[in-house]
Image (tube, rainbow, N blue to C red):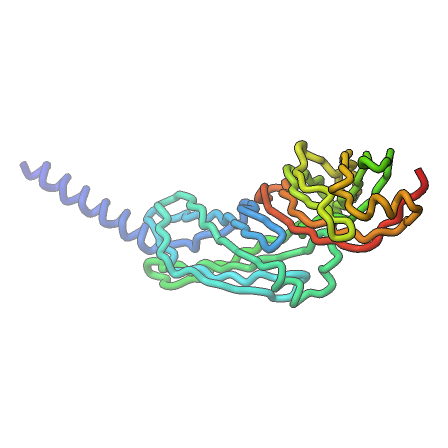
Length: 284
């Protein structure tokens, strides 16, 4: 009985020593950047998600009371933020802390006018995580990440011309062309487009694009639409064309849905266009 009691006391003593050793041998956790993903990106702005791995080397769990971040564009501070939600990190384990950052491109351009014609910009994010640790108290551990981000720019749609194929007093057959220019460093797709064409104030065309049109990075593509016009549609313009008039006023309006070969790009974004001017009909 005496032997059992002695063994129990020894076991308790050794356990207490181990617990005391664990409590006094406290090391600072580490924070390392692991990944950045583009959650969503539009022509108006972008939402990013930065992952930082928090590793606790201790034999007991620790907690992070808060983190702060500061986001830089081209080495200049742009926005900052903080999170005070408590983060628990288990003993000898790693937990991922996610830092979301949202940017408005309007605000970016207001602060960095030089980016208006750029395809991308460099960024850096500084973050620090504050821990409550046994014995040694509060400790703040810094980490950072850097890279480049694309800047999506709105495709440009312009009126390409009007090619009259045949014409008589009963009407005309023609082709209308408009051009899509992609100013981006990535390909885009016009998944749908609705457009209307007026000539001299009369509706000549009101239709939608029935196919998807791909435009490669930094390239332009002409879209040609065959149309058949009756004399009533053309109105007085038909008589004027037959009589030799060459210049006519046009107005091209509509919307186009855009998809893109870019991580996180929100497909189906709609861009409007509203073009007007004078076009010239060559001899046919």
